Image 1 (cartoon, rainbow, N blue to C red):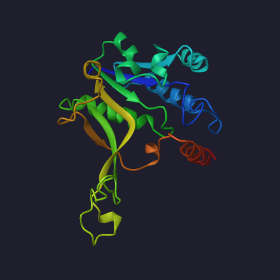
Image 2 (cartoon, rainbow, N blue to C red):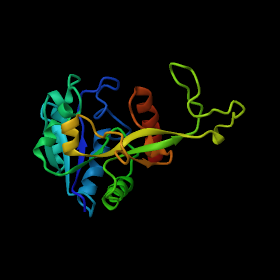
Image 3 (cartoon, one colour):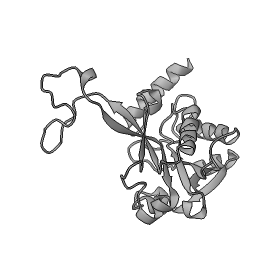
Image 4 (cartoon, helix red, strand yellow):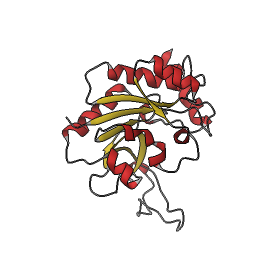
Length: 230
């Protein structure tokens, strides 16, 4: 097995969706949904060498919930959860306290991301040792245009209006990524865009790929969550 640290992390400070992690989401919260998944992974056979939950002590509600979860808690600095943090090295400074070679980061803003998908990606990375890092993408079939030139990016056939026939563009999903810890600290970056750094792990479009960035996203996902519970 490769030496992978499963990183779960959250903060209370959110600009676009105030109190995003803790505000009411159906009968629960995004943070509670997230922690339940990480706890379940930690208690089962999994492809990770270590599982941690990173929060800041000043985020008092998250800090209490994290410590009540039974997970290993990594303490984030106040800078790392602020909007003043510059780059990955400051946001992830607490990873200096660990020595695992790789970090698998799971985003808390994807309420429908399944445990099975997290495990499958971890196992895939473990088996395929030629991969240096990994990020998830989904194919998007649509007309895409260059913002400056206003010229088409992916569909050069002006007679083709059927989006199913347009060559897809791969869009980052940002729910799971795996990177080399020391590389990140040396370069303040996750990867260098060379072959398999990152490897693009294709996910078909599904509820699992829904990311909550805005209040509109929150309302849509909450509605789908409540409908799925009923």
